[in-house]
Length: 336
Image 1 (tube, one colour):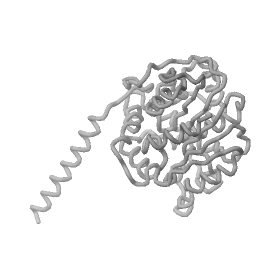
Image 2 (tube, helix red, strand yellow):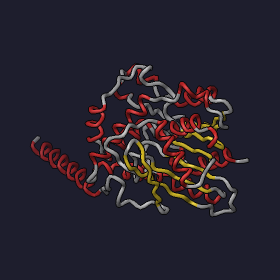
Image 3 (spheres, one colour):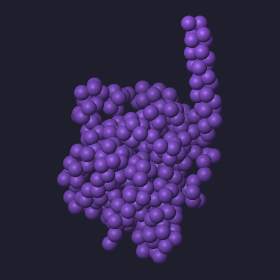
Image 4 (cartoon, one colour):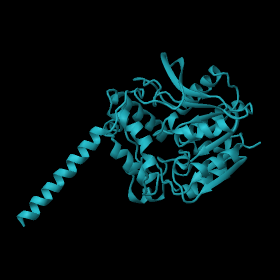
């Protein structure tokens, strides 16, 4: 018995040591993702918003194939950055598109303001200003997750600037509060964000994004985000993440889908179960939230001129899970 107990204690200590070593080995980054190199030069758009100087950042990638005169603007999700779009940037550039991959205020390499009223209309306004700064009057808007939610808002707010709209597993397709998810005060959300780590992000994404599966290629965006939380500006990162979580939870786009006038393609991984705040809800409420096999079809019916592309075996991030299949669908959606 003593031998077994000693062996168990030794094994537990070894596992704890390995976990600690693994955490220490993970990279850390500054609050604006300092120390992480993007695949293309990063440009800044300096502007004033809500009485303060701010910067959005973006990659502006010229066509590497025969230029078609069209521009695609890529909008990242809440747990992703402009750099996450790297393979998509290459595919679009080779197909002749100019590509703007944007980091929104509060995310990744953009400013982390202490006092900012985050809203989807404000982020849409900022994005329109960045496009004007880059000399882009009209573009294809491609948004993933929160970026899809923002893309839908952008299309409603600035229809003249949208050639086509592609929404990749957008969130906001259901009203979580109306469904029974309790509201989390901002201070409580901040305390939760401060506890965020690589392991907690991975556990969340494995459960909701990837249907319980995990592959090595899923690590990169998690390390990018976790590195900012763990870095010297982690407080600022956590505060903006709490603010934008509040924005997402209180501003679902589901009630205004019928106002989208641009030709729209929905690309939906059907195993996705993403539902912000679901962990605060009762098991009964959780069970009916984030059913993207139903949400995608319901949204396609609600959006005029919408086309639905379904991947029954993929989850929240088809562009990461199966890039080749995703890119074929994307290029097909952008075909003349």
